[in-house]
Image (cartoon, rainbow, N blue to C red):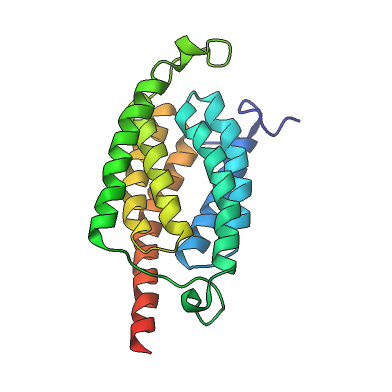
Amino acid sequence: MNLFDITNIFFTVLDYPMSYLEFFGTIAGAVAVWLSARGNIWSWPIGIINVTLLFFLFYQVQLYPDMFLQIFFFITNLVGWWRWSHPSTLEENQKKELRVSFMPLRWLLAFVLLGMLGTFGLGSFSQNLHTLFPSLFSLPSAFPYADSFVTVMSIVATYLMVQKKAECWLVWIVVDAVATYMYFVKGIKFVGLEYLAFCFIAAYGFYKWWKEFKQYEAR
């Protein structure tokens, strides 16, 4: 049995064939995001399992920017795991882990602007992947610009999450909404449902982190 082959079906529900790859990749992602929303450091190692499985999934459905994004996520899961567990003395919370913080609005706007520029650049590149590297990418990118937006803004959101900036969840809400539409259209509906749920988890995560930040101010 090849776990990494999307045609290897685990079960079928409502006429939708669920592959082992999509099922276990999605479940690992859901657990990791829920733990992140609660500020639990174990979100990072479980996230490593998630991104490894999704790398193979996205390659097989021609979402190439998303595929490359999983490599970035793999690295940042390692970095985030270390960053949350090794804060400086002034950055640590009662658990001796990195504490939640906010950043100036001008910095958030700067990150968003860089994300938009990155989306245009990556979208233009991914639109031509099948002509530039036909031996690797036999089919054109399905949604070059929408997929690139998800990819680039996910990088922005992940960087902010590694630094435990509460604004990361606001970026994630937008990213997850775009990804939900894209995955449903591409027919990977279980992943689409997961990202729809992520929109609500991101809202919860922002509330949870904001509440924790207010507790610091009260002390």
